[in-house]
Amino acid sequence: MKFYDIKNISLAKEGLLKIEWSEKEMPVLKIIRERFLKEKPLNKIRIACCLHITSETANLLITLKFAGADVALCASNPLSTQDDVAAALVKYYDIPVFAIKGEDSKTYYSHIKSVLSIKPDITMDDGADLVSTLHKEKEYKEIISKVIGGTEETTTGVIRLKSMAKNGILKYPIIAVNDAKTKHMFDNRYGTGQSTIDGILRATNILLAGKKFVVCGYGYCGKGVAMRARGMGAEVIICEVDPIKALEAVMDGYRVMSLSEASKIGDIFVTVTGNKDVIDTKHFLKMKDKAIIANSGHFNVEINLEGLKKISKKEKKIREFIKEYTLTNGKKIYILADGRLVNLAAAEGHPSMVMDMSFSNQALSVEFLIKNKKLKLKNEVYPVPQEIDNEVANLKLKSMGIKIDKLTKKQKQYLSSWEYGT
Image 1 (spheres, rainbow, N blue to C red):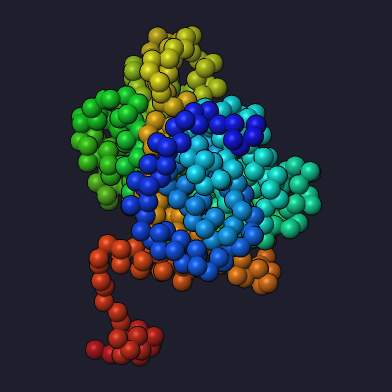
Image 2 (cartoon, rainbow, N blue to C red; image 1 turned 90 degrees about the vertical axis):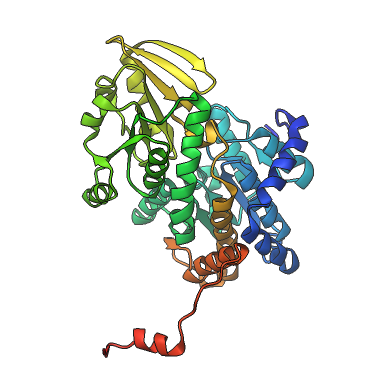
């Protein structure tokens, strides 16, 4: 499929308005874009991007193009594409986009290959599907040898890439944008928290107040979802495998128990772990009639859908993003958005304000890779340089009209000395 053969191309104008609306809440990226436009730090650099195609992502791609880069974009999830935004990028910015919301798995991977056909100098990933495809297919052997580096946006992707590096498979350096403090402390927590609740409400229109709301995973994403669910009046239950995170959830005032126990009493279940078969057949069979299940982890494997189908005698679509499964025991289970990211499939993803910081980290990390390509970094996963993290935080505070104090020379000397006195 060619990038200009996008469904609903007539919606390009609507997509442009979405992009412009998001830009109003992305002042840091706008500052970076203005500098990039003058300096052209990415001139003639080819960047292959596999990201959720939202209005916020569009602003990142426009920033990269203004920096002089040749960019191509595909979706990092079959249900996360906003077709009007994709059309706007093609029509108004001449950026190749290979994506249609609801594409099947075969089309999804064909689009990844279309993006890789630009022979990238840099890869930009959201889940590591782009990188893994580049590494698995023999046809990319020559292309991969010339890649300077890449960036990764998600926890799931960073886990995959670190595994590749550990096993000596990774062929070029990757910057883990997800690990930047100005990314995971805000995007993962406040972004995932708000957008997940938004997706569940748009899909179901249910009242959360009084419901028993089970959150599987208490990382930054889980903390955000739990915080927002409690704010809506739900009784929140946390399920964790990490004893420290479980203890933290207890101290934060949540009920903590095993998923086997939570399965019996939960009304709504949300997975945010990055792992597989978190909610399994044994859990489905224990659930109350009409339990609702959603996923906000990167891939749809967190819910064992194949296992659910095997113990179901009937499937029925109830609403656009709700599928009803009637189990062999007669109970009904409702799966939202086919187990895909409910915040992107049923809603619009994270608010622009938090994506401003995440995508600013992306843009500055790409610039860092290009500026430092002569250093010949090892084929490992690197953290975002601290100076970039601090720059993004300072620019964000400035855009909000907030000024903070600075340490005096005397205070710096005191903190660096081991001879503390009274």
